[in-house]
Length: 194
Image 1 (cartoon, one colour):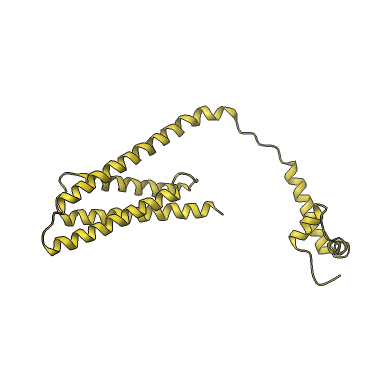
Image 2 (tube, rainbow, N blue to C red):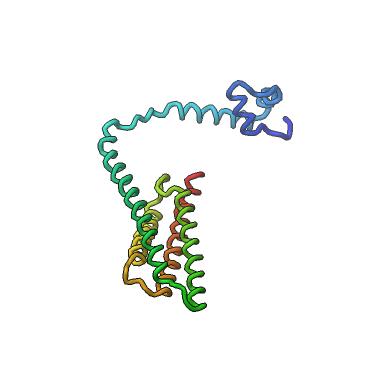
């Protein structure tokens, strides 16, 4: 018996009738590799003995309306987001009329945080929330963040929003919520890829 044992790949090849000459010879003298090969053969037999699973055919009628509702909700949210962005841009323009250097600094800060918010929204779209399953706890966190984001968008679209500093703080909070949402979904997407 040599000091080297067969790798799992070599044992699988041997099991499938494609093993090397060395492996065929080695298996006759090495009890450990022979036992490993028997275990692989037994595992294959147990897996083949499992009953076939056929999902019930009557489930689609129950699931289809839910799928349509979710698609409609996404469509409404995306149009609401576009409308909110347009309203926010107009309000921001009105709230940040040219003036002193403080106003220019606030305007620049607002532009940066708005750009950051936009980049985070694009990152969230790229991740594709809703395309992977998610643990219940993570789904609850994502839903709470989405609700908070909707509340911020409503406040940002409000005609009463006239102070630049208030707009800047709301946009900063919005970027923070989006960042947390991206974290939740990217963690979920990374976990789903394993």
